[in-house]
Amino acid sequence: MSATPTTESQESAAPRRPRLVERELLVPFIVVVACFAAWGVAANLTDVLVGVFRTIFDMSNLQSSVVQSAYYGAYFLLALPAAFINSRFGFKAGMLTGLGLAAVGGILFLPASQMLVYEAFLVALFVLAAGLSILETSANPLILAMGSEATATRRLNLAQAFNPVGANIGVLLGAMLILPGLTSEAAKTIMSAEELRASQEADLFLVLRPYLCIAAVLIILWLLLAFRKMPELPGEQAVLAESATPGAASGGVAGRLWRNRRYRYGVIAQFFNVAAQTCVWTFTIIYALDVVGVSTSAAGWYLQASLILFLLARFAMVYLLGIFRPARLLLLMAAFGVICCLVAMFSLNMIGLIAVVAISASLSLMFPTIYGLALEGLGEDAKFGAAGLVMAILGGAILPLVQGAVMDAVGDTAFGFVVPAVCLAVVAAYAVFELRDRPHRPAVPETAGEAAS
Image (cartoon, rainbow, N blue to C red):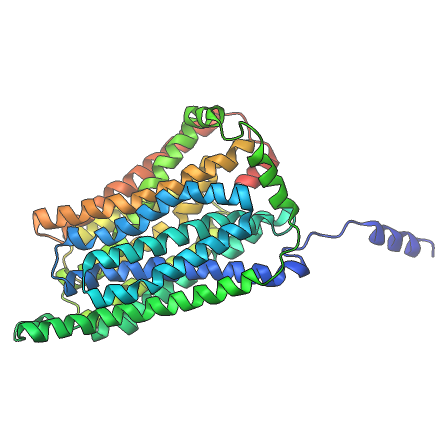
């Protein structure tokens, strides 16, 4: 009879399991998660634009791939300013700045479409990506701060799962709203100069519509976040206090990070991982058009299939990581990606196109895995080390130019996939280094390992 009260008292005294998101933060959390999907839409709609601008402005592959340089270059350049905004004014201010600037970028597509100048679109894309860079840099730590540290990793993984959802929406917008309505090359051959200009205006209007929709969504998110009072976030106060400490970002931290081979090689691997991802998705539509001869209206669906596979594979990789060591699975998937690139280079048919789509399965694992491996065991330096891994996105600005130049020089779209093959080989080399180096390192404390994961 006495066991029951004892058990009840023990249960009442037991600490409450921390929630993933506290009730008072649920609405702000949903708004921030919506931002993850929003920048996924914008980023992958950009992949469609490379092929679209090549057709509308009659450019080379190298010229059209400057779209990605404008986009990812802005991400690289705005990472540090975003960190200063967050440190001085807080994560919410950083998100509002990013949302506002990105909305302006979307609106700039309106005058760009009227000017009929390629460079005007590059400016609009740069401003859009600059805002999204600030937004992404602010949103990740804000999600971490919206609750208990014990549930921070799960909370961030949940938010990041909506990014590929947005990516699929972005490509779907391109496949449904842009590609089917473009003027065919055959029709252009019989048009007069006036008719060609009119068709160009019509095609650029197709590009304008989805970006104005994105701008409208970003404005709505800005309003929802601006007029929603944010409860005090202990996690944010800790990060801001640390960043405000004199000498916190001094050369001491930078020197320690640079001397850490595991981190240094991780940044390099992340650079080439993002480069491979951008190269593959940038030229999937062009591969379908030039190599396989797929119609313009159907080509976008192969990029859509790539992103759906990427989304499904990401959940599959979560399961496989429970079976394989992260570095070993990273090596297997990087090798699989290299093989797919080689198949795409030498099987100039539907098999090659399927191989291009299949590369996305290997890519799905890489960004979070490299991120976790490179930061593992860094302790407090991980907060600054994360900035270097974000800036490694610069690979997405540089290597598509290289692939476009290779395709133009050789006159072979398929051969251009040697560039992502080399990128994935570098990722495989990092996985090999990780597997060989780990037995010689001291064990990472359990809490540190959990934080890095």
